[in-house]
Image (cartoon, rainbow, N blue to C red; front, side):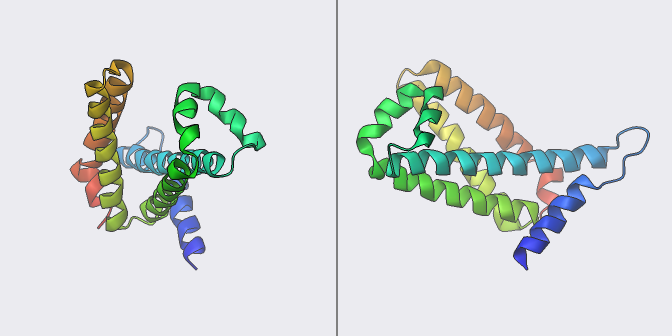
Length: 157
């Protein structure tokens, strides 16, 4: 039943009637849908990273070519890093499902996850990883500002 509710929630986001000029309501719904997609993407990437670290030597290992520095740092940790990444993927998937159903707990969870990303970006600055730190802090900060807007918050009851 929950899958049906999730499908109907996602479908209602995309089935909004578009007038000759795009309304504010339409763009608001598109923003909510985009952030939900961001949560789904994060869930997939965390699960993929966690899976390749927990069960190495699969064809999926090639994805690490996108970030070889992270792979070389995480590979020696194996399951010690893989299991928490799988857990993060599950948490992000849960947040995405609740987000599309417009549950208040999902909004809170999303805000907590993004705030953690901002703190991670600031932490990178202290370790002289300026590019990663600025990127993480600025993008995370922008997402957090979006989440904390009254209009976004009010969509969650």
